[in-house]
Image 1 (cartoon, rainbow, N blue to C red):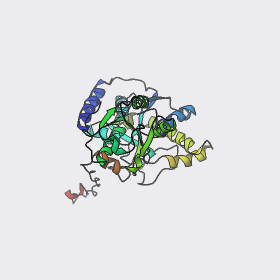
Image 2 (cartoon, rainbow, N blue to C red):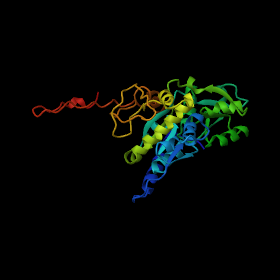
Image 3 (cartoon, rainbow, N blue to C red):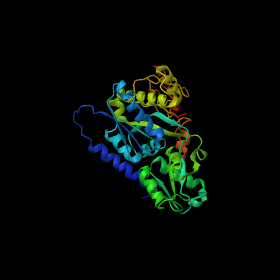
Image 4 (tube, one colour):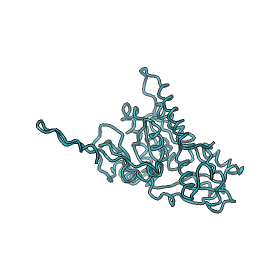
Length: 342
């Protein structure tokens, strides 16, 4: 299965509409918090959730949480929009692709900075040029792995629709099986690609930080309705995930050590902040407290940290200029009309 970006956006918009229409509107009790990940076989994505559950960080923060891995970013999106998942952890480009399709979601935290994706190949592939006319496995159409396969094709002057086959296969197990049967010749994956090489199942041909060195690999996001209704639960979930990142980064050396390690592991959102009722954070300044995930500030459009992702996903568009606040109105003088855009 492979398709164009335009076809994917059309299908996603229709699916999002159906998901919103199908949700019950009656009064209901708050469900247990489901933390979803786009895939299971990515250490940096699924690891913090598994550690937070195993070490009781969710319970310690007063949250009854469960972990549900999905078979790609688009499948996770349906659960987040439908309200089944409290928060989703996924690839960094998903926020641009899904929001362009009209999905009512917002990014709330950065989970993995930098580019940790790899291009894994079978034994008969010796260079990227050998992949022309071959098949590359990804999770889902529209997922970050799909975006990277298309970026790689364009970088070598290929048409992603004709010169290479981008095949959506779902989870890592299905992709490894297809690679073993020679149905595909390459896989785009995260840090699990290094595990496949260690297991002798494939070879890391290229680290994709050589393609996009300035990148945000993984993010956390939630639906706009969840942000309005369950902002406190979102903070609890992010606190637990950041504590798990602290443990994974610096070991279990007590709360003080965890706070410092969490400051290195996570950063404030590079896009518009989503959690309501908080004070603005300063651009470029990380909050060094594992217990306080990034809070809301004045909305802004993709600053420097997220701009490379936006430009790769939307190569023919530019980020809209930030709106400026109007000058204070005076009873004698109306504000000028030129304030609207910088």
